[in-house]
Image (cartoon, rainbow, N blue to C red; front, side, top):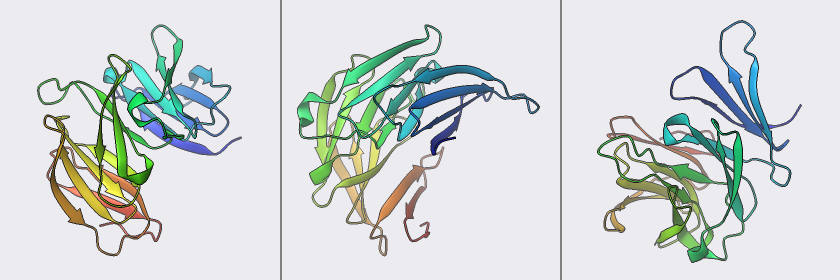
Amino acid sequence: KAVVQTVSFHPSGQLLMTAGLDKKLRLFKVDGVRNPLVQGVYLQDCPIQQAAWTAGGAQVVAAGRRPYFYVYDLAAARVERVQGPSGCAHLKSLEAFAVSSPAVGGGAPSMIAFCGDQGYVPLVSLATRQWVANVKMAGGSARCAAWAPDGNQLYTLGSDGVVYTWDLRTRRCLAQLRDYGNVAPTALAVSPNGRWLATGSDSGVVN
């Protein structure tokens, strides 16, 4: 038994991924009866804080309070440890991140946005595993991030309760929106059509 940090269905809906502080990534085949374990991966040096599907469900990105993250290839059953972004060397924890979807809206390259201190949000290419650039919020630390469906815009929410909209083609901030009353942000989500944003806080309020 362990604290489960992530529960997520595969894009096909046939696999369920769980990940947690026991350092284990598990994949279950969902049949509604037995739901058998299909694959299990033990990351010896990384209690998992967050995990997410990428590459259309062919890979999983997992990270914790470490300066590196992992990419697990399902077909090859291969685990790859990737050092954190070189352009943000002071970032000691990669536990909070958002992965873009390259298959939606014209094939924007798949990237990971990591939430960092001092307003920094490093961007890492999943294709090359290399740091691409930083975007920087004016105040507070980055707490949450979410990608627009087309993969060309990124939304970040800081500890000061301000949501930033970034154009990743120019890496410029397009807009800022203050989420009044949200003094301790915990979650950020974008609707599938890109029209709506939802934020969560430790008070239980969703805006």
